[in-house]
Length: 64
Image (cartoon, rainbow, N blue to C red; front, side, top):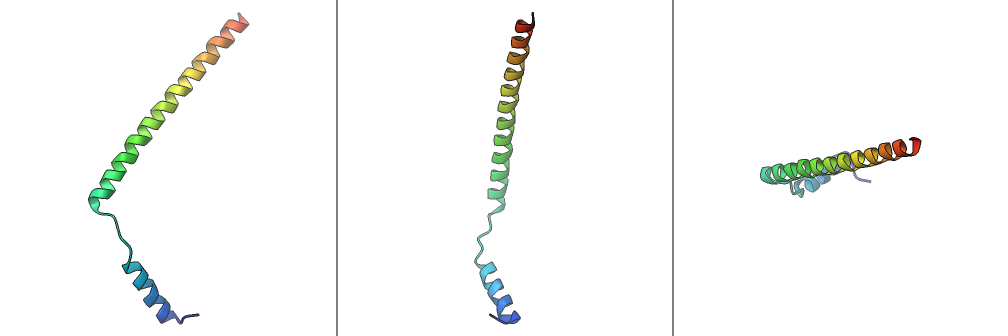
């Protein structure tokens, strides 16, 4: 077990090895996530609408 000073030094050394994304990479991936989330939500909205309409019409036909 290392003493607190050694531990802090080791943490700093490991933190220095981190490769942070550039601003452009962050913006690009953020935009991609927003686009894919929008496409996915539109897809599930349309599927939900189709299922709801199908069930409503099916029940209307069955009940007369």
